[in-house]
Image 1: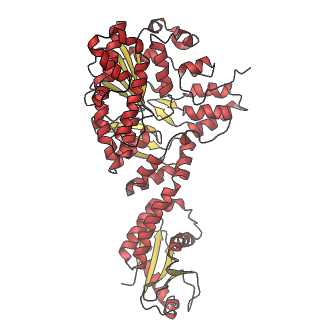
Image 2: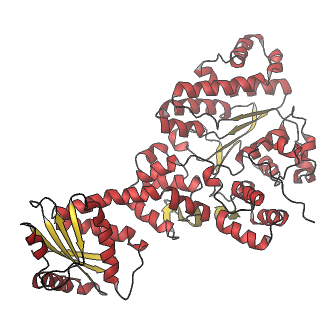
Image 3: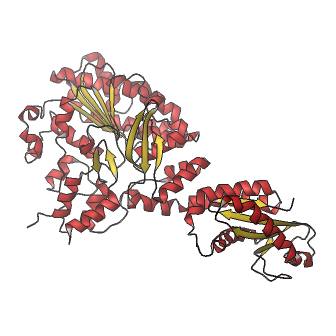
Length: 557
């Protein structure tokens, strides 16, 4: 009989999950990896909802002197490791999460941090009596929310020092979602003030602090290039590119197999394959990883739905993509058609570089935030060259649906420029813009091999719809001696009228010859008569010749 699953969805407190007897996927072997790691400060960067907070909570309960948490671990793997189990409950632990520091200006953000520090110190009120008299006043300022900005920068350094002296044991400092204040500050326009504060806050706590046994940080991005860790040359970063720690954030293949087996799904094997298509795709180091948030919701609801993409604000991603350059657009369209692109990845991402439309930084951001996956890595003298792809059906749906309006907006903007060039008679500009459009967007259209001219005709006709306020668009109409493809009639007869004739060829070398024939056809068949009958004096006759994605626009000059 299956034991079933009972995930405490939305709960990231380790003790609460265990006490509720909720399903917990055992990540306690992470503890040994951290103990064995000689690095004094470790940063884990992972996408949101990949178990960072739950792991940090688990570490707090395992190491904390005052947690009295031994029973929480009694059925977990770490109890089978006597050497590491000896560390249980032996350390003072400072745990702070910055994930809610999301304010619209620096002063409000600083107040939020002040409240976090006040709450932290209020849990250590018994510590005050062990502090030397000259520091009791400072402790009280932290306790009552009266500390200055400079004192707040030093708060974790002081607290770790006082805890170490009281317990005669160095402290663990756990800082969850350390980069949230930086991201929010960047979006709200007070980035430099927050960067300066965080540099002091993290530096004082983790650089050269002899009261700290080990510091652990989590976040989405590493932002060391921005000066955040300029004083922390002792930090070891483990991103999704790292070969170590891959199995501890997110669910592995075997863990998902077990979940599907226990979840009373009608056909666990079939459902596992469906889950793989929808929620797998990530690769941390050499390990295939599933999105844990989506998996636990899928196992609970037994429905394939986009769970993870709805848990965060995608406005930043939308904004970044909307501001991106043309090269990114072309690559992006390759991705949403299921293809892959190769990009140099730099883990030292810079938010100002993203803001200044740095394409390199944008690819980095999309990768580390969980919107792309790595297929393969080639290490070069410029850094890791990664083959990137959209991870799974859930993210593909986000791109196609949520960012569909961006694609339409960009296409509309480019289409407006293209139509302006056409209606103003700038043939060279029109050809250049149409060629760019063909190269980046034409793959959306199915080419009918029996009559490809109809496809190109429909494509251009769709673009011309936007002109209907100022022009009459006539397609496949009768002329003096035949049927024209498209005639564009300006409502203001002083403007330029146009006749368009489409041809499709299979070989590029035939394009010029076909253009000549098309222009001759316009003249001999009298396609311009309709414009002349309306009193249009300025008429431009154009041949549009297509060969796959290649286009030639030719007039009679």
